[in-house]
Amino acid sequence: MTLAVVLLSMIPGIFISGLKPLAYIATLVYISGEHKRRGHSWKELGIKLGGIKEDLLTNWHLIFIVAVALQLPIPLIAQAYWPDLFKHISDRIPLLNSSSIGLLILVLIVIPFFEELIYRGLLQQRLAWYLNGFVAVVIASFIFGLQHFTSGSPAVVAVDLTAVFVDGMFYGWIFSRCHNIFVSWAAHTAADLVGAALLLFLAYFPI
Image (tube, rainbow, N blue to C red; front, side, top):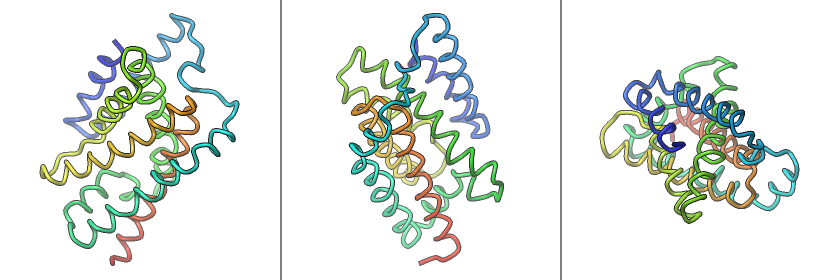
């Protein structure tokens, strides 16, 4: 049921990018309704404040890899050798086309939290009830990647979605180690900040 809700909510956004927020809204409504109906603890979704500092310290190396090491190569290579890929990635991020502080907060802080709640706290956790933990991470990361689909040439789209999938694998790995949404959210937000800052820098100061 959970997988069906997540997948069905994504369909409108895959075809019309402006409808992508519907996926978050629909799934969050489902989470809220199920929580009230079954009386589940929010901790089951990884929403827990205790131990955040310890979990961050335990996973700092994975956070650094996904937030820094993985964010640098593709924009640098794309800007120098594959302009179509660079433009595709830049166009997919609304922040780069707006000076709105509200949009900055939404894109870099709020949406990553919702994504971690949906794809790690809900989907990955539920898949792990029935599947091997690694398989659960892979499936959740694959669906997470699909949510970021933007039309373009097959090669460009494939590279872009593969990069998002790899990021998702790290977020899922981090979450599986600590079961704390706030830690995978920290990694996700840091990666988005570094990636967006690099894209902005390269847009104004091309190499």
